[in-house]
Image (tube, rainbow over all chains, first blue to last red; front, side, top):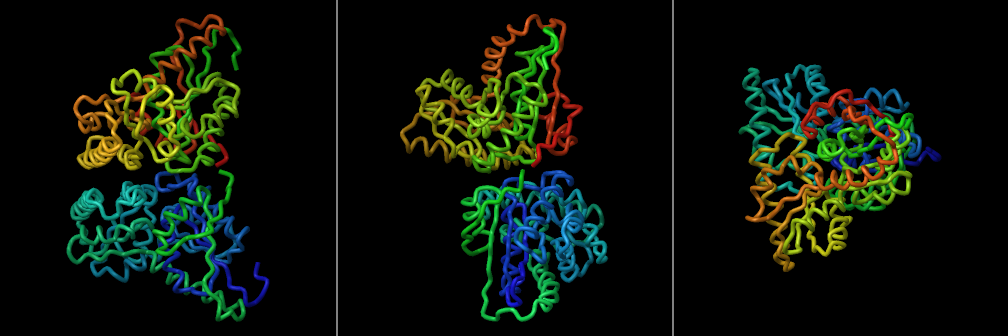
Amino acid sequence: MTEASSAPPTIGVFDSGFGGLTVLAALIPKLPRARFAFIGDTARLPYGSKSRRTIARYAVESAQFLVREQGAEFLVIACNTASALALDAIQDAVSVPVLGVIEPGATAARAASKSGDVLVIATDATVQSHAYKAACAAQNLRALEKACPLLVPLVEEGWTNHHVTQEIIRIYLDELTNDAAADGLKPDSLVLGCTHYPLLRPLIEQAVPAGMRVIDSAESTAEAAARLFNGRAKSHGPIDENGSTEIHCFATDSVEKFEILGSRFLSRPVGNVQLVDLGG
Amino acid sequence: MTEASSAPPTIGVFDSGFGGLTVLAALIPKLPRARFAFIGDTARLPYGSKSRRTIARYAVESAQFLVREQGAEFLVIACNTASALALDAIQDAVSVPVLGVIEPGATAARAASKSGDVLVIATDATVQSHAYKAACAAQNLRALEKACPLLVPLVEEGWTNHHVTQEIIRIYLDELTNDAAADGLKPDSLVLGCTHYPLLRPLIEQAVPAGMRVIDSAESTAEAAARLFNGRAKSHGPIDENGSTEIHCFATDSVEKFEILGSRFLSRPVGNVQLVDLGG
């Protein structure tokens, strides 16, 4: 798929739905001349309530689509649940480098935390995998994780600035900070372990204890991707300096819904979404 | 699959997840000597936020499993979304009688309503299909439908008796009754157009205007199924009068989760759930 030395390399970005577009939005300014192929597996979302076996099967099919059909030379798994439960399976299934969002999230938490204790909110499946706990432990951080299954539906309902959402966030965070105190932790940072949660950031900032840092892994994932990718891109020969970002979006369910909801996450219009059948 | 004249006929019951078990719970006392095969397509739930094309494809695969693999001689589509968007596709795909929940729901509303105006709450996909509006119109009822996408996640979070759930129900019902008044309707009945909602019935009863009847289609679906099925069963010859209900449950994702959540909907333990791969 790399016909000319000046063709921009393709970066495949995958999410179960729309949330990963917040990661794509962070990638674009860092890699302005890349070609991005984004797939949202909207026919089978959400992944966060499902089993490891099912998540891995679905995620591998999307990853293979990006590599085989779209010629992706690098994959960003812009979905916390798939990163937590299926990164190994994806790496086994494709021959290109694969970056998830968990490790960059832990790296950002390490940079932010002085106490060494952090909180993580995420989907059920991500929390049950304890992927954040492990990634944080590898950086000498103690992490306490909590599943917040109502936050994704609240974002999808568009209630991102609603008093009910504020109350639900308060309930979840009160439980989490009480559990942390009971465990003797002194957390000073909160990791948003789901790509939907950045849309709730203003409400979350209001609900956390004074002085607590709120960390979104989208930014640190984009930085890690840019480092890895810029290293690889050198082997491509000169890239057309006048080229602009190319974005191709694919969805496994309604492209109309993807275009409407997607633009909310990408903060720019998402047009020309193509429907893909992954066989599910 | 009907080896002996005394073998109980199999009734296939299908839902996208667990909610349809409330319909199965209503069917059991009406057909105590039947063999039930229930499948929950938990790997691909929820259907309520997805497109007609995707819902129909998924629902047909589950229906074919029940008929081809389980020998079902009669199907109950115990999912409002699949009944609203895929009943025709299922009827085209299998050769056995198929009953959905929408028409029995409208029949129950007709029996309950004096004013002839009813309200319906359901998933996004069910509301967008206007299947309830059409089924009610066929019975000379005017229906106003409203999507309540947060109610399913609240039930699955177990917040069936929570002040936040009460507030969300109040918000949805206030919007719906205001819209009804603006349209000049005088509704006296509210149809629960999703099989998750009966678990919220106590909170919904508290939130509706005084005198409004709350209608659950599970009961009227079970009555319609018993009428149809008892007619067919006569051709089977004598059924073993000493036989008891046989229930076989299948799920496309985690059987452990199905056993835990399912027992909440069936109001009895759900054991020996078998994992099925429908290729998605």
